[in-house]
Image 1 (cartoon, rainbow, N blue to C red):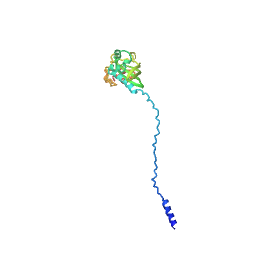
Image 2: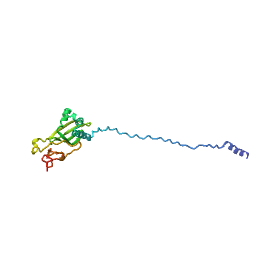
Image 3: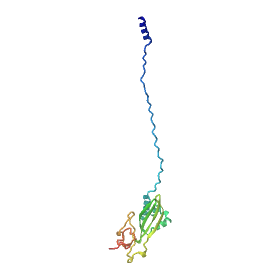
Image 4: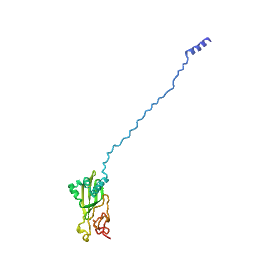
Length: 209
């Protein structure tokens, strides 16, 4: 009996159970930030050259004739009259018998301005022209204009001597049309009759009723 107790006692002392404490298991997750996929940039397209606005070319031609009608020949010269040949004196003298120019813009292609022009003369006749003005950077640089409808005396209707009077000075600049109240009597008009003075189409405007 004593041996048995001793055996039990020896087992208890040598086989003592040791408790090992372990900490909690930690799992670390590392998040890697993905770089955004670059979007390819399309190759840059060089801007197309832009032509000068057609309105600018037409406006230059209109300003040129507005200056002529206002008798501001120096401004008309600066707007391109100096590029059409001759001296300033000859340019100015070329309008001595012209009362008023009526210009109509027919077409504009880049800087080429096609016009129809009626030039009312001091004797009441109208000379009609057509052609093209070349405009660059706000200035007329060239012109190709031709006379298309003169009104020679031989083609004018026969009227009593002294009935046809000269057209007086035109209206102020910026007033495009005139009427018979501006005239002292009948006047010869051209085929286009830009001022609509010839009511019966016989070539004589402002005839008495």
